[in-house]
Length: 572
Image (cartoon, rainbow, N blue to C red; front, side):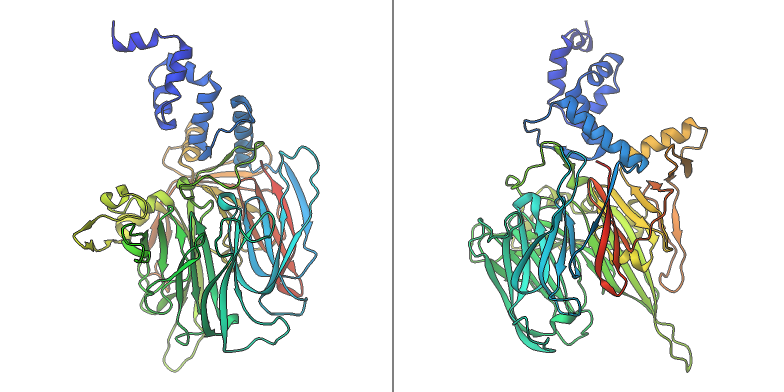
């Protein structure tokens, strides 16, 4: 009797229990080995749920509340709605106040900065947020804006709602009734609040953390705040005050209140960053046209040594022409990774799964300016926006194996020095791992346009359909199987109408942005994806996305900064 026959003679209940200790990927492999294991796995709701979580790129802490069949049903219905872009409920929400350019869309809530009054062009005076409706609400939800006025001017906010129930506001100490000072000494502080209550955060030893006192025009700076684990990363740059003010980069241990000013390269090098893991950042460098991967390191043996950023890898980007330069380089990924501790706000019992941060894609928005110098003729620069998508794990794969295997906040070193960062040219890593698009200015304005492995976009004409691109390799594989079943070649693009009137397209062939004023060479990219386009068209200024919803934004006719209303399209 062979070992396989002996194993298959074991009762199916015991086999199911043994298989439950495997990873989802291993369960999928077992399902492909023989008919008996296939049937056992497909008839066990817990194993099916494990497989579907892997397939759809979600995680679940498996707390009590729902049975496995109920969890499986919720997940599969959600994915069916996203696959067809079938809006199961749509609600319009008005904004009954004057909003600023500050916004965020995370944790199931939409947040907007608020102004003193409609004619004010001042920085934000407070913020308001609204918990968004969900299909799983047991009754009609009362949609109510929650407002908080901090009494000081807010430059920007960062949120870690799921992990810490935390909102961090970067504020400046100036009286609200004064006219803005062009060049004044301003006190910068981080205020740490509970998102749920608006009160000082209970885990923060210093609810108000002093950052710096600087002289700069606060109306001409750009601020970015991200929070993962116990660290808050703060970047303040001055893209509209060239060479006059020094960019600032801070690493803040927000629970202890410790602030560390990090060494900064030449002016204008950084403007955005994104967490890849709890201790690794990707930072686009505008000057050298590359993505820098750096690690936050801590010396546990010496508490006096401040945390620092150690470069691990530099990924080159498509080379630019001689007269082209990057003037904006934004990035965003949702959800953020989390630290080692438990989440402050668990996934709701009615929707226990969340998108997996490790599988998520990162959106990079790149604005390239080209100056066409002709003899005796002056012309304004030609500005062209582009965007590209890449998975988090595709970037991490280029970090040296020894550094990837090192403990969090540690690096492998030889003696007292750390090896120089690995430099990887674009031609080596970029074509297969990315997908590039030529964007429109409206789409580049909004950065919260990815959730998990999906990205939402619009066309550059109004009215516009809503476009959702899914970069999940399992979704691509399923679409390829459908194409082959209909007689299409496996490695060719394919499109097909859906029963609800929407249109689905599979893109697996390379796309090319031709060389010209921006790029020195053709930019080829081949990351496959499935695109779904609505048959209906909408008058939106922008679209945002999270795990459950798409938001369609409308701005005020007489105020391009403010959002007047938005539609919530719920998919589940």
